[in-house]
Image (cartoon, rainbow, N blue to C red; front, top):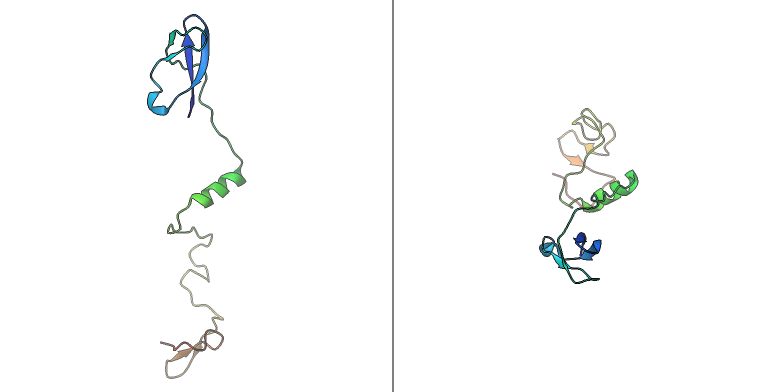
Amino acid sequence: MPVYDYSCPTCGPFEALMPMARCKDPVTCGACGATAPRVLLTAPALANMGTGRRRAHETNERAADSPKKSSHGPGCSCCGGRKKINSGTLQRPDGSKSFPKKRPWMISH
């Protein structure tokens, strides 16, 4: 539960734990029993964290199906659409392909 600031007319400001649904309701002062309204005495705290920790949180929060960003640009030899020079694919004169270093039990198509 969050901590909210309240101001008693006789005792002064104090803090109380309240559910978020009841944050606007006045509370009774613990010292004198008077009704105290909620006040804003302190600014909300901002959580700052380092770059490394922020990246770790972003990585953990990323969905498994979200696309991954590539650091490669267009024209990259691995993903830019160019034909790989040494792909390990053996192309025969009749047009069939085989992959001698890859799964030999698979039939080429």
